[in-house]
Length: 262
Image (tube, rainbow, N blue to C red; front, side):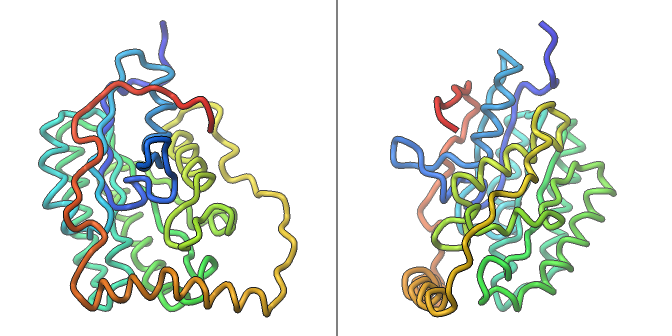
């Protein structure tokens, strides 16, 4: 049988988005866009296996230190690298340092013979007003990421270009992680980026939303700050991370079974 792609072993590196936070599975864990992408890839490749080394809360430096070596040891022919979000929102953010860590991952993974793909960052200010101040950082980091990817022939899913990626329905209640629909769109976008047929519509806009009255929007922002922003700030003040004590959910390559629902 002729397959639509050559990949037999996919390994995902990253933080909470790649781990799948915001997209719960039936066991109480996380599914996420990387799992969904693996399901798509497995449809065309009977021998396909997949590992996910991502852990929530990790910075680019931590992903490089903790996940790169294990990923190389698994000898994948496809790797996705999503890193930098947890750096962007820190006061100590240094774009040059973040890109240096990401580029080192690009260098070592491509040198191993793997096809490598990555993702840019969306305009978070359109998802949460409190994130508007980081837009200059996002633009800068995206420009550096695109340049590094070009230097090393890394495929890029450029989500910043597409308005649908800031539709609130693609984001979970915490406004930091994708919703199940958002994860599905990222998976389709990455499949399209890798050249798989049938996923070109990942950028299609959703039906128009009814405008939210200003007062209701303010109340929603206040509730969000209490439920999500406050706890995040408290962890930061204590030097804690949501990933403390966690390990990769899928450290070894395994075969993939597609879910019955999307």
